[in-house]
Image 1: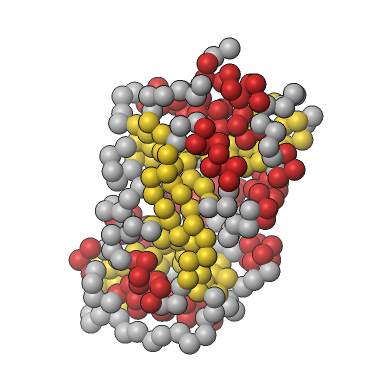
Image 2: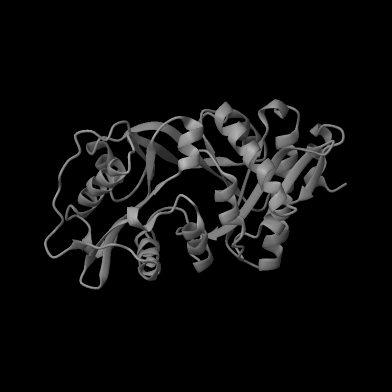
Length: 337
């Protein structure tokens, strides 16, 4: 047996089977597992079959579900899943990211450890195909996910960055803030969506981390049932996108969680238009747009060390930290033992 998998083999329950994603019939089980975990750990988001289908139907080199999703089964029942992807980060790494979830009824039995070991094995195989790179393994978990933290620590991961989930608990008393001179908000059509996406990608090039910048990722986003271009608030300076907020409402999530919440999924300002009050005005208009759609609260995520002072900006506009998450990394040289 390979030394990389001995620990997982020792701790996994008898009869555990790890198999590849078998197509859309697996989506219901994956959604069930993800939502059961989210409810058990009091996490701020929920998933839908339709949302996962939008992601899985647009494979690319960064994420292909046939290659990058593993289902853990016991007696034919899916009890966990693993998810893998890779990105080129802004601090110069090709980061091979691993994630997963275990049905809460099957926790503390070695299922999560087995999934994590399989994730690492698969990512190392993929990295070998890519050839020499400045590489690192990565993972991400919420503060309350003690099981996740225990597994990745045991594998040699260390925390490297922290993120906040922030909520504005009410959409009452919204500020009215003017746009900088010469800028205007325009409706976003499917034709303009690609220009806005590229502006968003550019704006985050000087932020920590990395994400899939591909056109396929844009197609996933546009296909997601929570995406509504009429909710996007984007400011233009002539023909140039100056900044914006890509807002969304997940009706499925709101139904499962019993609230009426909208998301400011990505708030960005391109460098030439920073420090002019543009982000404040865009956020205020975004909150108004969500309120007009019947939402009563709003949420967003932010890097705790965001270099543009976003945390203070969001707090000044009524957002409060509700949950915290950790980005973990592991040097690529060491195998699981």
